Image 1 (cartoon, rainbow, N blue to C red):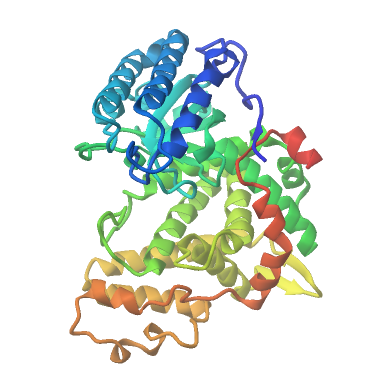
Image 2: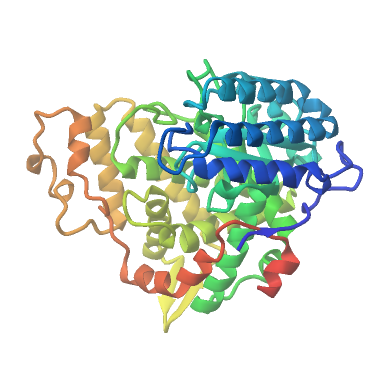
Length: 465
């Protein structure tokens, strides 16, 4: 069940005083979008000749209802005036063209949230789009969100972690595609006739990440009998505090994709690689955020200590047991972090109780970051396939490969006459299966993780859950 609550940590005198979701036009817009969505095919089009299809007049009526609602809401959001005008034009062009594959490039180019990152600033977003870890189809989605951009974060971005495209955001309300596990709003998910020359923004819903983290971590701590420092127990009851930790983590993680010794396209766009390469890249970015958080904590940033615990707990407790086991690269990163800490005696599972050496955890976690950074630096001088095997060796040092793996047998077991991208076919869907520890934990946390679908909750609701 979706939990929609008031924004957390947003002052009353924000740039947009009236909440969009309180305006009577918002439920009208939401209902119009929800009416259109089931009529759409995977590519966003509507086949009016299909059996059971709506009439053209019925679709036009809903499009006009959506347009009227957007026009009513637009005065609340003068900073998005150009976008809303382009949005109305794109909706009308889609309708006039007979509801084919939608093309919302013009409105996408007009939407520029990163140009005015003000804490609490609202945006009303409507696009045909898929939602990552949510709806894979390019259906219409309407979302009302607020920027999460406190002064301390803005100053860090300006002086140390330049990331001009990053937007920390929080949900106000949304349509069905976000009543899922999706926690991002990315321009590349939107239906357009051609990709823009460059993307100019990317949003991550830190409120959903924080709420999900709190619920799963609390359950894992109880299940594993883990003793945590008192200030971290307090953190787990405080949604705003966790939200600030996640927006800092996300900002540093996001910029890390294009920083460091990178032997390949940092986002691996249009590259076909074994999924452990994606897992190492995501973990590298997380551990870089962890390493920076250690520095920031020494400088007095309270949010930085929270980031360290968020990275360790979310990576070790939620990521490995969330989603299926088909090329689960985020899960792999969590498994690797746990195994590395376990083999270095920072984590112990003894007498059915988990113990963590909190004093040594930062140092050893940074050592894993160093191993991945060395892998990357050395990879600059290696052929692609040699780099992939070096990465496999790093992962398999700490995680046991599937006994039926061809890659685990080494280069001699593969047909090296094929190009590297073809050898990806020899990677098993679950190349590094869960350990017995994680198999047991997955069963214990299954219902808790399922309960976080669509969550955007503040601390009171979570504490009562």
